[in-house]
Image (cartoon, rainbow, N blue to C red; front, side, top):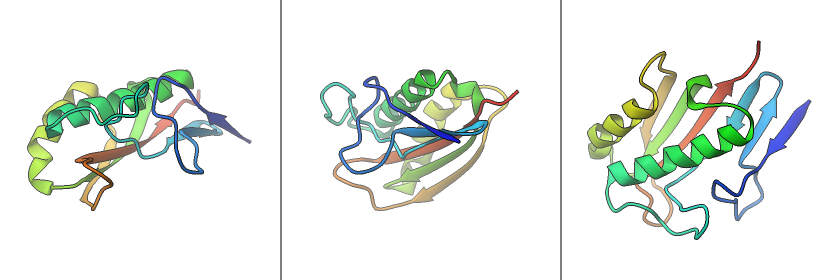
Length: 126
């Protein structure tokens, strides 16, 4: 059984997909970027600012599902420029200080002025 998760505390999709879905004991999020959930505007003019907003968006949708960042077991990150890895990594470490999830980071062509897009999988079973 799956349950769609949606909150106005994270950017609402403008295309036909869900913010997140709980399937069994796992929550799968869409790829979030550095958008302000209220205005839809891009937040941050550097990788650190964009990473922080992106992770705050993920944190909000996880909270709407009754989960938290410490429940994340897998992270996939797309960077527009792989030279931004160090700045991204510094902010990322603040959100995952212990029992860090597994992670894949790749270089990708992203929409608009996005420097980053992240999706996660969280485990919320017993």
